[in-house]
Length: 404
Ligand SMILES: *Cc1c(COP(=O)(O)O)cnc(C)c1O
Image 1 (cartoon, rainbow, N blue to C red):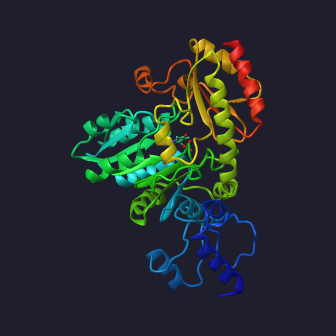
Image 2 (image 1 turned 120 degrees about the vertical axis):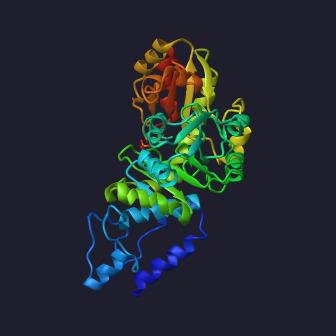
Image 3 (image 1 turned 60 degrees about the horizontal axis):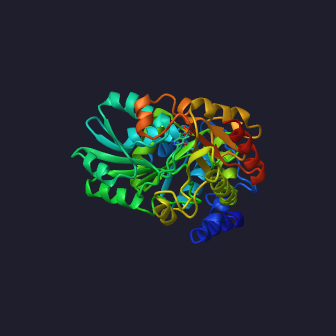
């Protein structure tokens, strides 16, 4: 081993006991012969060997190492290791999108005849995945209100293999009790899968609260600047093996370039989240005082029904604030159209503040009844509070309000 390899190996050992802000900058860096200070992008589809025997060993699994970038890639591995450090997971499996990570979790762990209990307050495309695709394979899903413990209990069946929730939820910021759901899942030999997009590992670690698998859409805060689509599943070696097994065969793999963007995004994650959260709190408090706003959904407000639970589970309350304007869909659309600074888009977790009308965009493919059951009204707006000065963000929201 040369000095550089030894030094890098020592650093990775040191990082095991370091703070997560330090891990976010350093964990998972390659300990090879590379001398780059920054992480390299391995844009190679396949890898070569010194001999036929070495190739056979690699393909047969007796020798560790890369074969083909649909299976593994060094840049993607750095992203997986860094995320695993931040979530306290044994292993991460990166995927081409958040939905690809979820597909890999579901197809890796479920089979015909299985049953899933899911929160009804989840990302719209996940409802589509459950109702239109997973269902075709004989896997049934029962939806429940994420905060109603009796409903979760009542939905459990002898064939329930998985519980799924997002906390805080999108867009209504409902906070699910992760410890409680983990207990319920484990008493039934089922797995608890938690979508941690809204908090990121900087604010919440579902595995430490008892969850079995945590997933992220890296597209959001992990990138942080709205450049790439990606996702990741994290958990124990044992639970990640079937997830990776699906991914390497089905090809839901993350590209090395995207992994490199996310690795760099992670280096500033803690600082960015701090700024997003502080401004979001100010925005939520300001909105709560406006007469044209009927209700604000933000777990940081003491009026939020699960504020105490959010305080226990999360180190802070996140950067997304949703609210009902007084009026109907037209009023909500007028609000959107009269903003000037905010980007009108479905994405969130960006340095740029964004505004979304969920009922006609991100949640537009749900049936009207499903939307009503999930509490997504026609007057609901979601703001992802970015890194612009908070006074400028609030001034823009005032422009929207004046038009309601
Ligand atoms: C965006 C999102 C997803 C899906 O991720 P993609 O990267 O868009 O595939 C899943 N869950 C939540 C909460 C999201 O916001």
